[in-house]
Amino acid sequence: MNTAVTPYPEVTLTEAQLRSLDVPGPRYTSYPTADRFVEAFGPAEYRQALRQRAQGAVVGGVPPLSLYVHIPFCDSLCYYCACNKIITRHHSRGRDYLGLLAREIDLHVAELGTGQGLTQLHLGGGSPTFLSDEELSDLMGLIRGAFRLLPQCEVSIGVDPRTASRQRMRHLAAIGFNRVSFGVQDFDADVQAAVHRVQSFESVQELVAEARALRFESINADLIYGLPKQTPESFRRTIAQVAELRPTRIALYAYAHLPQRFKPQRRIDAAALPTGEQRVQMLGNALAGFIGNGYVYIGMDHFALPNDALAVAKRQGRLHRNFQGYTTQPDCDLIGLGVSSIGRVGATYSQNAKTMSEYEDALAQGVLPVVRGLALTRDDLLRRTVIMALMCQGRVEIESVELAHLINMRETFAPEFERLKPLAEMGLVEVTDQAIQVTPTGWFFVRAVAMIFDRHLQADKVRERFSRII
Image (cartoon, rainbow, N blue to C red; front, side):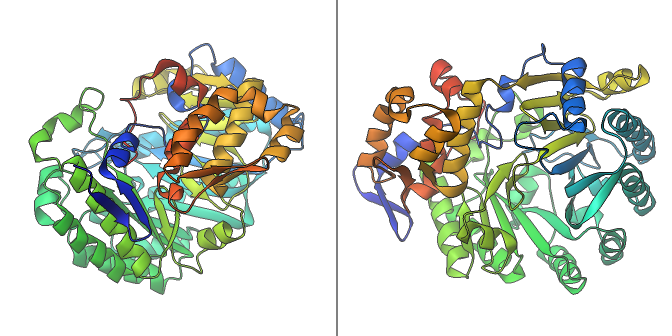
């Protein structure tokens, strides 16, 4: 069958072309991706990276600093979830966890000193709102005691609407949060039952209204398409409801069904999952629905209202990408606190222990709980430059890359330029002597373009650990 499928009114590709693009691929919140981290990089290597930052021994100057804190606890299990989480009703564990975070913060202060300025702080999980108001206040106190929140610092938190209230929103604002992200996923009752996450539209509507009244600078809603029991028709209703809520930002993720890796997903009936064609229709409906309601398509998985800082950054060519997705922040060093957290300091990546017992043991011994990571090679840094330029600006300026990395791009990337030709024939990318330019059509499939330059991915072809592009 060769009829055209239109995922957005301005994008028309044949079904064969869409099938060729509908493959697993990284989201490129980093390059190399986290699956490339190695155990040979541990606490000593991470400590050295921190010391180099503290001493200012960084080529090009010390970059801004971002902080991520992982709160792993949830009251109940969402079957689709691939996050590192601990399901428990024992809220006393939150207080114990704060003690562990305090130790980890002290270990960082020992290397960095007190008062490093933060331009970005994010609490994720799990469910950060598993913590009580008092515990959240205490956590912010720990952070402020060790770091300095700069005047324009983005202070954000992920909120599970089932564990929040108007009073909770007021408390978050009072202790300094200025950005909030609500986990919505889908409003359809059958879908919510199938993934074990039931929450009403009205409850989310109340929280969004309160956040708006409190003048949070950014209100985000997370959605997932490709969940069990979803249909193009049911998801179109969710799209309309989210558009009615009018969050300033929307994150739209494709569900990756990997039950062999993520045990909770084994509770999902694979037969209830939408087909590939239905997923394409859902994506198309979302693009048309949100853009039709005035949102700007930022790229891959983000939408924003035109006056939101993310949309402004896209217009001005200032988009960046980190482990939280698209951001207005320039390239930052990122310290990850908590079990399983990922960080980036200098030309290194690091990840903490994924189990609570291993995380606790390291801290009990006074050791940073890093269990794996990566020191980037010259080739990694070069390819990261190219991939992030594609993901964020949709354009690689060939001369700029050549001058920055002292290479001839056509020679260095000769195989990659060959692999770009089929994408150029589809109209996804244009290649000239000056630049590699992602087209308006290609912007919807930018991961496919970026994957061309991923040396690790091209080498092993093992991609089933990633979500699908469509």
